[in-house]
Length: 172
Image (cartoon, rainbow, N blue to C red; front, side, top):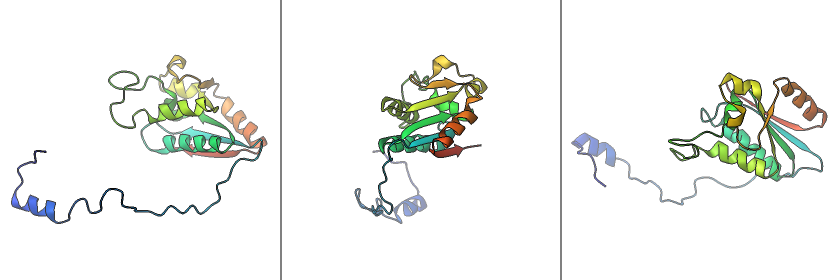
């Protein structure tokens, strides 16, 4: 690897702390799980609400990962993408072409939603959120379910009445 031509102070600064300070594989954190590994009781439901923009923070991605985890624990799980969250359901993501990743993790939301759907989860996408951002229904990830803007409240009522755990995220 060719290094830049460094002056004396740059070399001094570069060499003050040896790198890497710890060899690869060095354990930095413990792995003791404090809470029991709960599983769903028969018939339990889990709803994840996402109002967060894809790739603007980890909020949307982490919420989707939580939905996958809840589903794998046996909960009947659904994700409801509304407002800016509707952007997460866009199947036309990629660069320089659809489906190509310009950087590691660029398609992680798409891949995670596809996994969630493949494993039996439902993903609802608010049509109003789509319209706000100029996203057409035909641009959605296969298997996502477009819903009317008035469905949000009724979805919450349905899951509340079923005693569901409701995990809500909101990004402004």
